[in-house]
Length: 172
Image 1: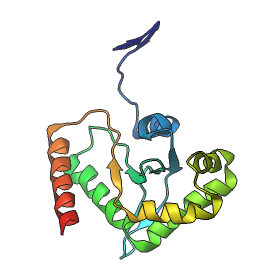
Image 2: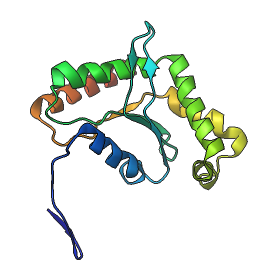
Image 3: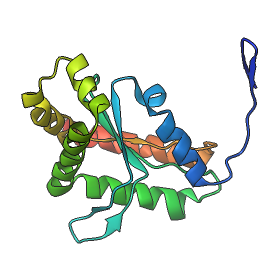
């Protein structure tokens, strides 16, 4: 339980992954920072055409980083569900065509949403530089964000192993 003033927050289980996804989407600015832009689900494909749909993407303009979001419930198997799904998403999102697609998704949101456009203005990113800045951010390695209701030992061990492999490949 968390108590803040007269409000009490009690831990409760999520009814579904969709419920968790909606909470993450509604609170993306608090989770990823006030200069983040949340993009909803979008189909991405590996180079051989295998499709996968992450639960969302986040571009953090202030830290110049981006996230692949995959909301999960701890009842799902790390080895049969979470790890293979995340691996496919990382590989698909690493394709140059997918990176361009993500950049275009943000560009389209900027055109449609004054709030998205204001984020760039607040960070002194001129309209003419938006595409360049987004391309530079999305050319970097994505951070995998896994909002989950409980982190078990296997998930913790897997994430440490993956992080170590990514660090080693970055050093080469």
